[in-house]
Image (cartoon, rainbow, N blue to C red; front, top):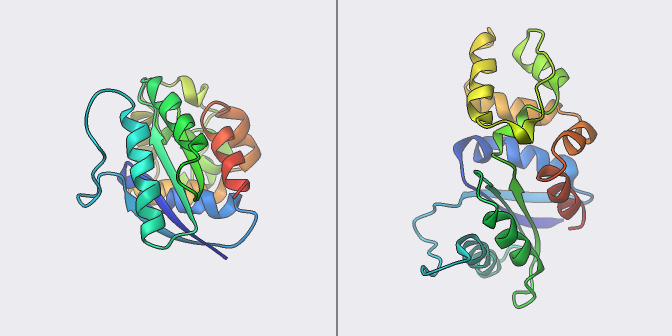
Length: 191
């Protein structure tokens, strides 16, 4: 069993959705502990350049210090291509020996929730049309909120995300989010 620290930026990811996706992707058993990237106790060195590289390395060090076997970290791209470079560099960084699966959701994690209309239909209990290319959506968080309020299910958006993550077809998600989810999924399977 792998003991993994899962770090994410937003409440919807840390509300269970990311852990559900990771557990579904894992090729071995994982015991996961979620944490928010904005944790007050974790400080990355400030200064010019490579902000997300520094944050990811700081989380690698923290995960190792806490006795975890692996770090799983997802950040939103938010239209800033430098984040993709920073996270790729942290994934390849060899000075900290800890297994890792680091990812960048293009534009945001919410886009991953838009990939599979069948999962959305099941969770929201109404016929949801196929959503346009999720990674090209300029405001996937709002698109998810718009879909969520139409349903008569009484779920919060965080609960909706966790339910969609449980029902989403992983292959469809990889195909529809090839720049963000697909490389992240490969890294999780590689743990």
